[in-house]
Image (cartoon, rainbow, N blue to C red; front, side, top):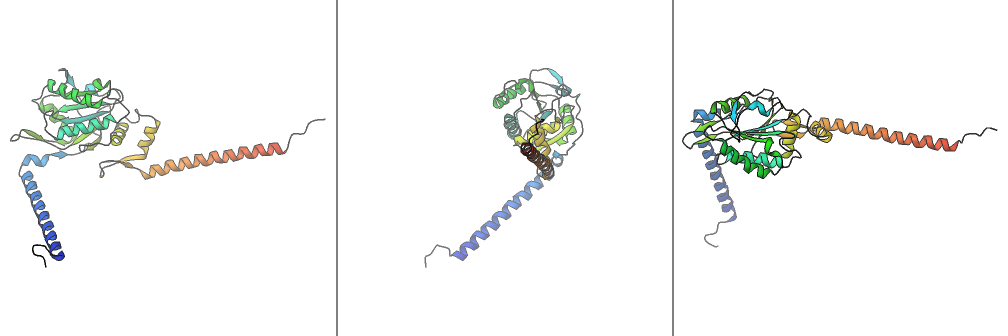
Length: 289
């Protein structure tokens, strides 16, 4: 018998014990992390409470990436739905991922910001200024690569009372950690109707192009997109549990049934025309004497 080599049963026992110890360690670390979060009162409020159907205050004042004083209402009311993001431009991680996700999805849409819809990005950090907003805008416009999008994607900065009021209206709660000098928040993008009504929340740092497209179609109430786009929207609906748009089987069946009726009608019409033609050929009209 070789020394130093575990037998098969002992090897299984060792692996099982190691796996159990690893699970216990990970669970304990998760509990400690949750306790640490719960120990900070402000952290309990971080998250999102959806306010679908509510209108955001459009009289809030900001400064755009050109240094001009603007109101939020200037980006609404022209018939275009709006994709809105609350971030801060010096964010070391999460905000960058959110903007990257929006850019990647928008790049794959057949539409251009400023023509069919708008993109509005607002900093929650009152210490950030217009020059930083302009620098961020240049980076993401280059990444988007859609000529003409300059007027359709705005990067704003402003006083914390204004961004906080907007966040509260959206149900998006965040917390500033003075120790690490960073904002703690969740990752989400908001889609609003042309009059500023909250239409859809898109969660995470990566967004499916189809989800963004359907959310914009939904927010525009069919005013953008072609007939096929509107038909696709009819076939999909937003599933809160899946946090995305899923196929709506009932509507697909309705469309399938309608198509079947049309096809059957065309088939019967073709048979009827052939039958009529064959009868007219079999009995030629009698010539008068």
